[in-house]
Image 1 (tube, rainbow, N blue to C red):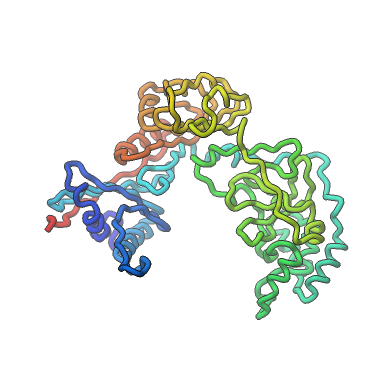
Image 2 (image 1 turned 30 degrees about the vertical axis):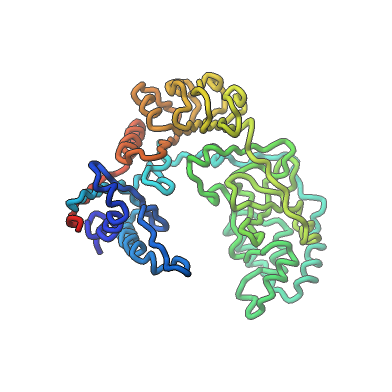
Length: 460
C-alpha cells in the first residue's frame, strides 16, 4: 500500500485539484490547501453538475471519493488521524506538496488547513471540565419516592417483562462502583430491558416507553456520565461556564460520578439518575443530559416514582444558559463595550466584529476569575496589555496580535491552551510556523512538516 509520503498516494487527488484550480495554480506562488481525516475531509474539488432532471449521485463524485480514500488508507497505515496540506502545481506539472501532520500538542482545524487549539500543558482541561460536584449537606430523596408503589405500577403496566435477578443487579453495581438507589433496583427487577428478551415482540419497546416515560436502557449498558462523556474542543469549551445557583435543583456540571445513565428520551438526550443533586434538588432525581449541550443537565422528575406516575409529563425544565456576568461577548450584536461586561465574576470574554475603535483591555485587568480571552482581528488597541491578565488559561488571537505578543516576550505563562484565529487566505505555512513558535515556548511537540515531490506532466 502506498504510504502517506508517496506521490502515488496523492496523485489522483492532485489531478482533480489541478483541474478545479488551473488558473490559481498557474499564477506565480499559487497554491491550493485542504485537510483530510479518517471520517471527513475538506478539499476544494469542483463538484460535477448532475444531469438535468435528477439529483447528484454518489457516482457523480466517485473520482473524489476514490482519491480521498487512497489518502485515508495511507493515514490508517501511518496510524494518523488527519493530515493537512498545501500544494503548488505550476503549468510544468512539477508538483510540490507540503504536508502538516498530527502533533499530540495540536488539535486539527475545523474544516480548514490551519491547526486548531494548541495544547500547551499536557492533559490540561478547561475549567468547566475540571469541576467536580460539591457536597450538599442535608440532601435527601424526594418525598414522592415509594419503591412499593413504583413496583406495583410497573408490574401492572408490564406484566410480561423479564426482570433482572439480584445477582445481575449486584454485578451492575460492581461494574459501576456505586450502589444503585432502591428505585433503580425496583425498575430493573421488573424489566431488565434486554433486546434479546423481546424476541419477535416488536411492540415491547413502545410498551416500556409508555410505562416508564423514556427509553429504558438495558441493565448491562447503564453507565456513569462523568466529564469524559462530553468530548470538547478547547476553543469552544473555554467559552463555557459551569455555575450552580443557590436555588438550582441540578448542579451545573459537565459530568458527575453520581449521574447514572439509565436510558434515552428517544431524541438522543440521555436520562440519568442524579446522586449528586443541586442545593434545591433531591438524591435520586431524574435528569436529562441534552446531547446538544456540553455543560449542565435538566430536571425531568424529582423521583422515578413521580415520573412513572406521570409518564406523559411535559418537556423537562430548561437550564439557564451560562451568560452574563460569567461569559460575555462584545460585538455589534451583543455588549458594545468592555466596560459594560467587566464584572468580578467574568470568566470568559470574546471580542468580535464591530464598528468603532479597537479596545483597551484595562477595564478587565485584575478581574479575579477571567480565564479566557478570544479576540477577533483588529479588536485590540494594544495586544501587549494581555501580559497583565495573569490568570488566563486560554488565549485566542489573530496572527498579527500573536506576532506582537511574541516579539514583546509578553505571552502569559499561565496559559494551558491557545489558538491562532486565522480567517481568510492566510498562508498555511506561516500559520503553522507561528503555532510551532508558540508551542516552543512550552517545549511542546511541534506540528511536523514534510514535503512530497512529483510530476503530473505539463498541461495539455
